[in-house]
Amino acid sequence: MSTMIGMRRCVAILTVVSLFVASCGSSDDSSSAAAELSISDAWSRQPADGQTVGVIYGVVSNPGDSDVRVVSVTTSVTDDAQLHETLMDDNGAMSMREVDGFVVPAGGDFTFEPGGPHMMLLGIDPTSFPADNVDAVLTFDDGQSISFDAEVRSIGGESDGMDDMDMDEMDSADGGDDEMEMEDG
Image (cartoon, rainbow, N blue to C red; front, side):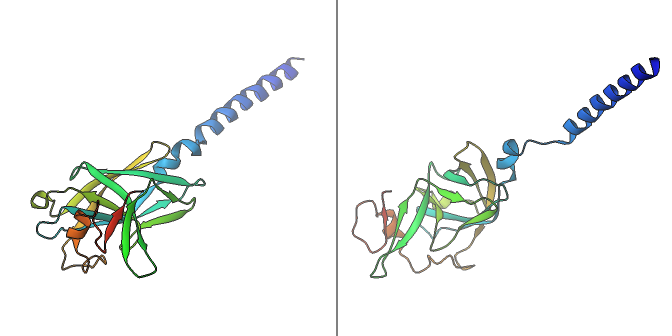
């Protein structure tokens, strides 16, 4: 009888130990999904003299198993940072408009790029725009965020597709009939 009791105790102890070890190795993927989000190749174009708008580009990666939605961008260079998309009409005229977010697919990427979706910086002071990096924060629909620095590139460097656009037209786009205009989303 004492052998049977000893075996039961041993089995009970082994069960408790194995449950403890198993719980130490587990992780809750739902709470770490946002931590997996990242941004790479983030850059911003150095504004031209007198220009009061800027832009940030980059690639947001989501290795998680659920889609996430970028809902806002903030930066210390302006109080007015927006998520924008670029549209082309049937006549080839480009326009931009603020949007309420972009989906980053599960297991995929979303690219902020010249001529496409981008992070628009309005009302910047070109005389105090950083020469090396622009700090920014992307916020997602679940409340999580990514802080990052976007490398500032000079106008003479890599083209962002905006070199031929009159940036003053974007500044006055809130009511003008210029070829390049920003629309309210």
